[in-house]
Length: 519
Image (cartoon, rainbow, N blue to C red; front, side, top):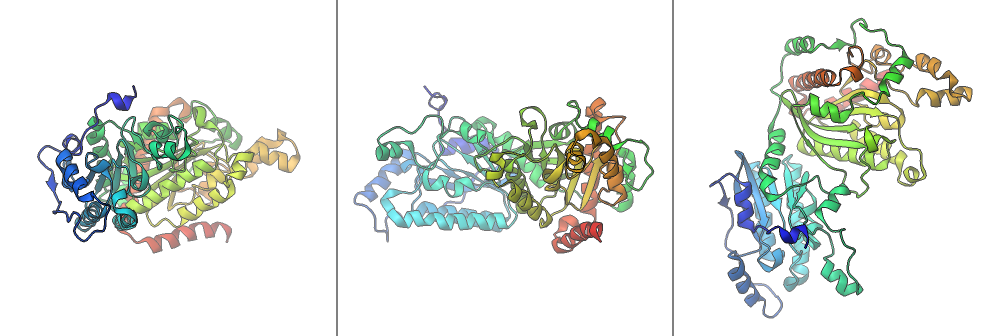
């Protein structure tokens, strides 16, 4: 017996009771038209009556509003007991009306589908209704409003291929059957069963299509954390206050004299210490709250890039960062860069600042990477980042090798750990190109100006964070200090009006910052 079979599936109203604060749900539903004015299959009117008696609902979708840990939200939820949650004309009209009302009210929208897809009794007209549902969701997202999805058992067909797959954050019910073509239809068409274990919530999570697998009893907690982060905005501060916060956090300002004398080759070696904290540790020890997300939804998860919603100080942001530890410590491939671009889009859609964290031995050199379009993905990440209208902050945490590092570097402000560095190739690779041997790597590292101090001197880095004497020897304290500095920088961006939407001047300033390096 499967885990899904063992778990009793909650109905639409039970799910709302689990997720929403007690007594807060208010229905938005108007009476449906039924078969009036509809050309449908014979017996359809009787099917609708039977479905209403079985489910206690007048249609396959319930809509309304309520509160999740006091966050006011709009909700749309499928009632699978009504004709397998299928979407016909009336259900589509109800969905669109709810999405548009949520947009007008400026509310986050939580969608919880459980559906076999398009209602076959209504034919092509029901099929085409998916276009209007997606258009309504698009307008909601274009307004900068969160769209959160909980995929329930089962969600297939046109629903999975439309409003079920458009969430800013997407969660799924444990053991849920999720896919495009239902297994029963596949077996009937192909004469064999669909391969087991493919169309499951857990497999979709493994492949980066779902951000989290959450049981119904944990849904309120999960969405409350997401909504907390999305609601948080820095109040900003004066430049004097920011400077004071920086001193309190122990910043090493780029313009200040070096307090540590670190050679380039020594920095390279220190940055490769397996005990040196990575993006994961920075989020764990340096951020106030974090919700990790999962992949770009392209089915090619590499686990080399972390994408998260996080809060530093008083400001929430999207974080995109290389993750070099464990199995994900390999070089970065195209799928990792697509994950990064998902984070950039999320920052754009939700109008949040973006923090990029750079710590990579470089982009992958392999047949798979070339065929997967590695060079093009680096270019696209650069393009997306330079064009992002929200504030951006890049953090050189450790190794900064090649195009993989460059793809996440351009930002309004850049921080660097003292032993971080940036170079077109690792020093060994540069030595091979220049001298046909790796033996000149230390000398080339010194001559290329790759260190945080050298980058600060050229205006590439704005703030250098000291290590005492090495982040690998003080990982928790280092991450806390870095987290404080990130919070200070984000607050400064907010105080300068950067969060208020002055996108074009910010893009011009961002471009001018790098143009100066080649002038």
